[in-house]
Image (tube, rainbow, N blue to C red; front, side, top):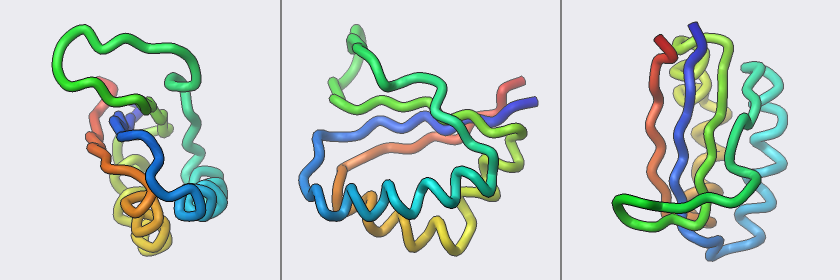
Length: 95
């Protein structure tokens, strides 16, 4: 069953860090066969705190989603993500 990352993030606060994260993320996403399935269009927060960036990233399996997050290469990329955005990331099983 698929695994998912649900990412809720602030507006970008460091564009250079965001650009570096995007560059690094592309290679990592390919390795784990991750794809963004939602978050490119409009959204409405109807409960809870509004975040301008909401993404749902799909992985082939829940284990792939966990392994990607724990990958040493992702740890490097995440440093740039955390400079660029204040964010929350939840990993869920698609069962």
